[in-house]
Amino acid sequence: MQGDAQVIASLNGMLAYELAAIDQYFVQAHMFDNWGLGKLHEHLAHEMEHEQQHAKQLIDRILFLGGAPDMVARAPLSIGNDVEQMLRNDLQMEMQVVDGLKQAIAVCEQAGDYQSRELLECLLKDTEEDHVLWLEQQLGLIGKLGLQNYLQSQT
Image 1 (cartoon, rainbow, N blue to C red):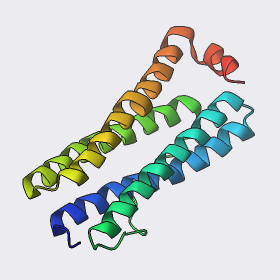
Image 2 (cartoon, rainbow, N blue to C red; image 1 turned 90 degrees about the vertical axis):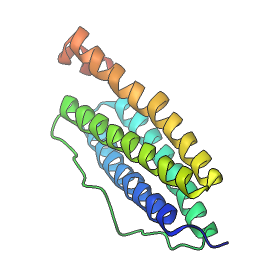
Image 3 (cartoon, rainbow, N blue to C red; image 1 turned 45 degrees about the vertical axis):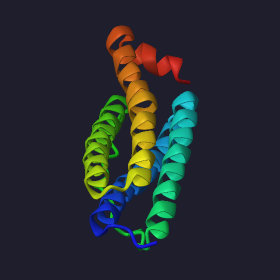
């Protein structure tokens, strides 16, 4: 099937975010593990797997539409040097993903590609209700408990 060029470009744009998130979460998970923060390591490794699933879904859809997945393009990484900064960077990245998904959904709607729109809506729900929510909760805990108490709870 030959898909709309703008839809394929939008899907590739979202793929760039997912690939960057995979890389960012991979590095951060290993940093957390190295620092002895096992719970954060476990959670980020799990988030990395979610991002891999998102990337696979986008790749499959791009291929179905007759496009070529752009596996080179990446959104900029922002790893961070400490736990709070890393969580803030992750939240900022996820909020960019939310904005990108909303724009891509609009492109799909305009092109009449309701299946791609549905895929992106599922990714948006997962991003907003899982990834963003968890990050906001962690930053809220740091604010309420203090960084040292939060870190202690993550060992």
